[in-house]
Length: 529
Image 1: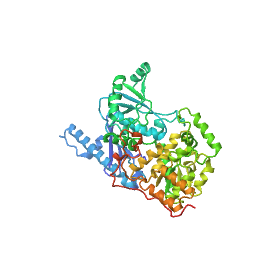
Image 2: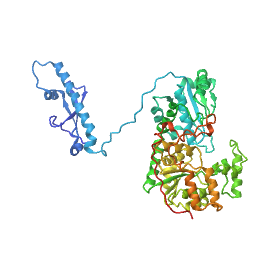
Image 3: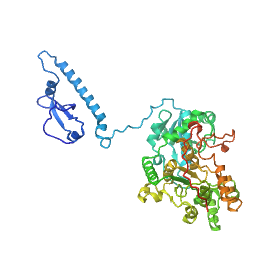
Image 4: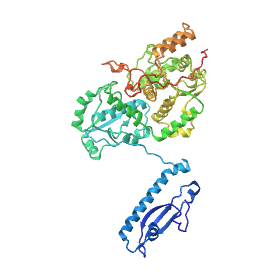
């Protein structure tokens, strides 16, 4: 903005007038005037001058001996307000006049007014598990706080799991947005008030584990009285604390938290968008959640495709982790029951059976694959365009997130949401939560493998019982209704573990079942040779 010494001609230019009273010998009131010509050619010539109040009065109307001084001042103030209004209107149109690149008038996010209610206590929680297990648990905790009229303290995240990730809530999610976006439903604070903290330090914190798969009457009748007694209650676990089938208002609250309030930090969001752009610039892509990592195989006891040395190594690892309760595992029967992640080779067979184009970009959302490139070679032979975030980004891009498995998983989560196809090889928490989120985004294609059927078909094809065409047609037929399309959530009253998981199919929050918006898979008619 240029500056000039001379005072501009007030009659030739519009002006923003700001009264500033100064101590000076003449007792004058000076007006700072910002000249407001908004044409592009004159925008750089905006200047600031100073004119006297007596000159402004002469410009408003001629002086007369009988004119009341007070009325003149009132009229002067009114005129200045009109000038301010003119300037505001000019500013509002400035973006259109000179283009969005010069002036950005950003609308701040709307946050609803705070809900006023009688606080019945404070809920503290420690979320356990990996990223997506904690994500679902946090949604449940907000719903519980909402319908018990509690104040929720921002959850603590698990730092003691297998990955020993030190990340806390603010390192993964935008904590201020989380708090403010839910302010019309539930009061959320970052820490207990000082008085309560001192009381807890003196008397101790009442901690408990709420029963799994519970309904709302359990919380009203069994849990709420503890808040009345202790004031502050701490849940040491958050996973599966609510059942799958609850009143619709509770379900919608869980969805609002999951799909609206839990926004990743700006750093994670921006890097996730960067990965997606790199992929999109090269065409369609499939996200393969390939759970063939060492810890997953050791935990499940699944050893398909492993040699004797690897089997022994995985068994030792399972016994070394004290909280992995299942030690003796029959790998063969577990695989036949559909409880093992697919091997890379089995994954390649399944993808070719679905006629997925071998030229598609295959983004692997996973940790280090057990056996490394040796084991990935069978998948790469049919799908050569294998990529990961580590191959798409520079080391400097990923450096802030390394050694933080949950932050790295958050990047994979964002890429998974945007993919043309999402294919998980194991039904873990990420597979379940991402599938539900993709349903919420418009029933985007997610191939939910029926591994009991698939493993049986793969074995029949490998031993020569089925031809390739028979195998491919059988795989397609078995999965025709398992592509993320609308469906009713299965219910088994009294057996919640056998029901469809709410976060996989949150049907109360989805468009009507007649509405679908699946992207068609990128296909190829070639056979697997």
